[in-house]
Image 1: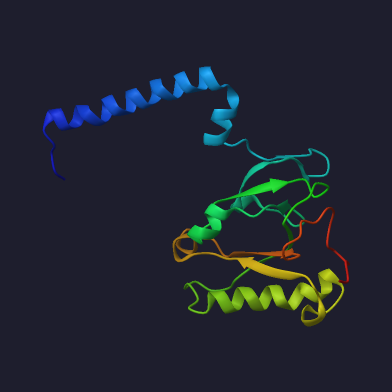
Image 2: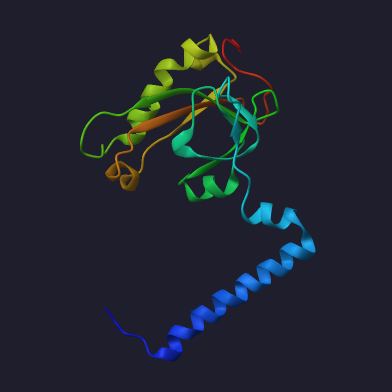
Length: 176
């Protein structure tokens, strides 16, 4: 461990304090909309149905079968997803979770991409109601990373979507 001179230790504290003061000033001048952009609201589930009732950010580890969400360009660009912009499925959305399954094993699979894709592909026809090869719909898996695998994550999330189109409602049995 390296010990920093006292003046170097004070500078980050002062910058942090200045940032907090500036954020408070912006929030009081700009209202809650500014804070929502910095700290987006969390998605809320209906207590009875457990479906997404209020749009908001959803931790990827709390995704449930049938959840709907929109594309997140920042997450796609990073290729690592920690939160999804969840929306009620009755509202226009980009994706719907049609399958959740766990990968087996203690070691991170070198073919994780293929295993995730194979699992989603195998259930696509059952969910959509027609073979993938003749469907206008597509799918993609969200799978564990080396880091999340080390923390016990084995879950693959399979999402179905119609390219270039937002869907309202479910794609279960859509047969298109």
